[in-house]
Amino acid sequence: MDFSNWKKAVVAGLVSTAAFSGSTAYAAQATVTVDVNMPTILVMYHYNTITLDLDQAALATYLVSGTAVACGADFCDDQGDPVAIPVSVIAGTTSVTQAVVDPGLANTTTEFTIVDPVGVRGMGCGTYSVTVVDLSSDAGITVDTGNSLSDINGTACSFALTTGNLIFDVDFDQVDADPASAVFDVTITGI
Amino acid sequence: MSILQPACGARTDTGPVILIGSLLLVAAGLLSPIAHGFALSPAPGNQTVNVNLADILQGGSNLSGSAEQIYPLGTVSHTLNDFSLPLDLNLTGSVPGPMSTRVDRPRYLEIQLSDAERALCLQSSDFDVNFRIIAPSADTLTALSGGILRAISFEANFTSSTGGACPRRLRYGYVLDLDVEGAVSASTYQGTAEASVEQIGPGTIQTLQLALDINMPSVLLLYHYTQINIDVQPAALAGALGANSSCGSGFCMDAGNQSAAVLGLGSTVPVAIDIGASVPAVAIRTVTLNDAVGARATGCAGGVYSTASYQILNPLGGIQAGSGTITEIQNSACGFDLRTGDLSFDLDLNSISATSNASATIQITVVGL
Image 1 (cartoon, rainbow over the protein chains, first blue to last red):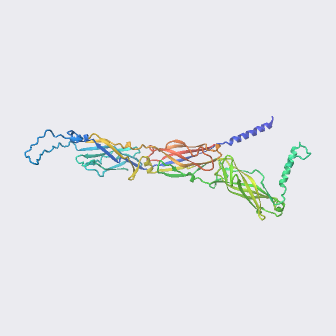
Image 2: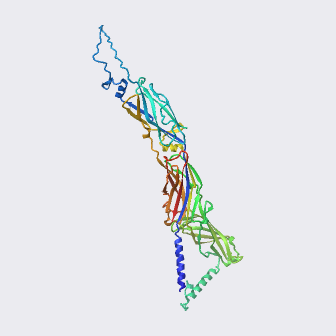
Image 3: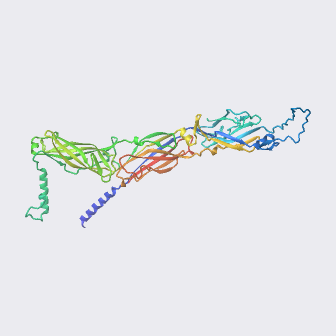
């Protein structure tokens, strides 16, 4: 056996191993723990102004219970035809009196329920508590403080949106402005 | 040259004999005394210096000897004021620096004294020896495969002498402090040093250019925080939920104006004005952590970090499982200059808990092949 060749083979093998070990991969790995601390929070969603456009015909029909009829752009109550008015004195200026008969109003009040105009999300609280205050509503408009937003009042806080109804009464017999307006202050508290 | 050639009439088949004779003659020439003054020569032996990992200093502390080293940087806490803005974790400010190494070599230069100087019994204190790097540029060594080492200081120090009480040879080594933050490759950084030797008294100055070779090792360093605390501020969460103003002690979203036509009237009239149509959906928000991971490396194959990635593990309380690439690091050039990258994760606000925090573990992997 030629041992000189065997030695060469061993040397060659060692060199080859060294060459491979020179290309070792370097990888580093570590872990980071992340904690995200969430705050207690209450967010209320609301509209700033809600405008209700009442239909003329609907209002007229409701108020006089069907005795009004279209009359040009508005409505009339025909008091009957003909009307006989006796005139006993005729002078340079003659006064003829025939009062229009008040047919009366069939209805004067309506309860409006604005469905879900207010919402709330809460986190870190127990239940919602609601107060609704009438700030400066015109005559004839009265907020129903007891029933407004009752869907929210007492409900458990949640990130899911909780909505509530706003309820108020309008007495058309007392409304004296056009447009009539009302301002309600809504407060939602997380207990 | 003549000593390497056979003498006239000598046999040409006596190569080994002639070669041995030549070596002896060369050695004798080195040992022969110079006539006057002093002469400079490189100290014998291999001049290349291998830098060990443990000799590299990071902010004054030695690296370990491992090719992969991980540096946890502790806990960092930040407040999140706006989900649309990234948090700057400023890992750069927490990583120790600068990076340097001290190369110490006992033999680099020899001063050979003439018989006349030796008769004066000159000592090392009679010579002022200075080293400086002059090429490829001042105070700089470069590697063919890229990267530089900058000399912070390069001091000569007397190490030994031969010839007894009145030396014939004075040997000097050096202590070279190098800024290694420009190192990129794990290869030989080369340059040319100039040794300037002044004999104090007569003021005789001689210079000699010497090779300077420094071998840098391969290493991969990973920097990370162990704990990241994020305190989400109420305004940030409210903003993510669509709130556009504060109201009282909470937050509101004014959805503007809404109109509805009431076409029929009765004693009760419902009017649908659903705020839900105007409320933005609770979304998944991405939290980005800038400058959250760092890496340094030398010796990457191809000169780049082949992989830089992360995985979101063990997500709780709204954090979403997932993975991502640290784009600022992956495929970017390796080097001892700190390279930092960002992490991010998604937080599903629909799933956050009112009673516990969101949490996750982020596993970071950086590979330099």
